[in-house]
Structures are given as structure tokens and as C-alpha cells.
Image 1 (cartoon, rainbow, N blue to C red):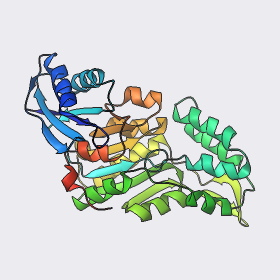
Image 2 (image 1 turned 180 degrees about the vertical axis):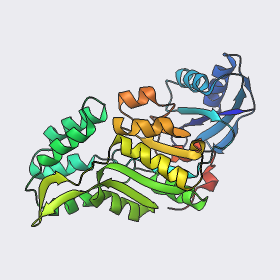
Image 3 (image 1 turned 60 degrees about the vertical axis):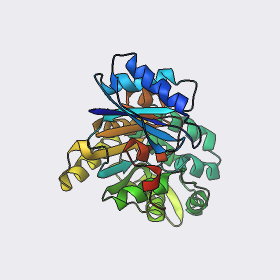
Length: 297
């Protein structure tokens, strides 16, 4: 079989009956299917298939399992384990939008969060929206950055994702439209090889309301993915990109496996692979790692 459909659910939620429903959805499209292989008991399973395109398979399985907490990712069977990971930070590797949380210390969280929401859904130019939001924080004590970091929570599976991929020879990069204050700390905590993002300017212990130019944005993320792949002699097919916002879409679409993670509507609609109902362990299952292969974080 030249393709594989991976069904992923929260631990204990993927029953044999659900796997059968997923397989039957492919057969209804005249696909040839093989026996399912469990990657994690009651959690993830691979269904080999041939005769239909991956996007047809994932759409059919998703529709057939719409009443269950299952994500369905279909792709080529070869080359599933990627050798380069480029991951967004906010609402992907961490659970929050760090700029919005920082804004709370200026009493502006609701106002700035609305700009963030519109920017991440592609309604506003990212760079202009970032400058506007940072400008509103002029005069805020840099101590607020540390307090924001203290409340920042890693997304479940983030550390295991990076540890497992690195243990199998992959290079892992955190690429964020957020700020180096946070990306550096996240990278250190869970072992990213590299982090790239924007830098807040400060003076006298207070934010100036500006960032270092040029702004690290959608095009920068795509360029980072391509540059890191080229430096390592990797084809784009060997890369994995994951994110949730409009500034992630270009790299998601360019990567061999591009995943929209609990993404904004514009991103979810355009991505070839989606994780809507699971945590970041799903990215390992999608690459064919079994639960027993996961590295300790």
C-alpha cells in the first residue's frame, strides 16, 4: 500500500469499532485497504490504503468519525518520519498567546487579544498588527515579562514531540511571531535546537513600544523552513511544520507534513493535515511513531 491513514484519539478513546468505521469510509470510495496496525492501544492506529488520494481519505474518515474525538491524517507511506521540525509557539507549543497575557499587566488584555484574533485569522496585516499591539505597551515594566513567563504553560506533548524527534536525528526550530524573551525560555525548557522570533526593545527597565525591525512574520517563517532544510540537504518532503495562525499558513503549506493545530478557520480550511481534537503527541503518531517509541521529556 502506498498511503496510510492515521487515526488519533485521546488515550482510551479509539475503539476497534471506530477504526473499522474509518477503514469502511475508504472502502466506500473504492480504496484498497490493509489491516490496521495499532501505534498506541486505544489511542492511534494506521490503516494502509491505495487507490484514492490522501485528501480524499482524510476527508472521508473525518466525516465518518465526526461524532468521535478522532483526528484523521492521510499521507504517503514512505518518508513519514521527518528530519526537520519548525513549530509556532503561541497557541501551539504553549497554550496561550504570550502577547495577550503580557497585555493583561497593562490592563489591555481584551483590547489586544481582539487584534491578535483578527491578525491570526488573516484579517489584518501581521506586521502592522504587531507594531500596533506592542506600541500600546509602551512604558510597561519589563518585570511584566517575567510574570507572564511564570504563568506560561506548555501544551501537552510539546516536550515529548521535540525529545522524540531529536532522539531520531531531527533538527527542531521554534519559529514565532512572538518574542525572544519567551522563545528562548521555551527552547531551553524543552530542547529546541534553535529559536527565531521578534525582539522587544526596552529602556530603563520599561518597554519602549517598539520591536527590532524587520519583523519576523509569515514570510520569515517560510524562509526559515526553506533555509534550514537547504542547510541540511533535506527535501521539503522531509520537513514538518505546525502552527495555528495565518502567519503559519505559508510554512504549513510548504512542508512535507504541514499541520494546522487547533487552528484558526482560515488555516484549518487550507491545511492538508489538521489536529483538532488531540494534543501534540498526534504529530508523532502521524509520523508513524508508536507510543513505545516516544522519548522521555
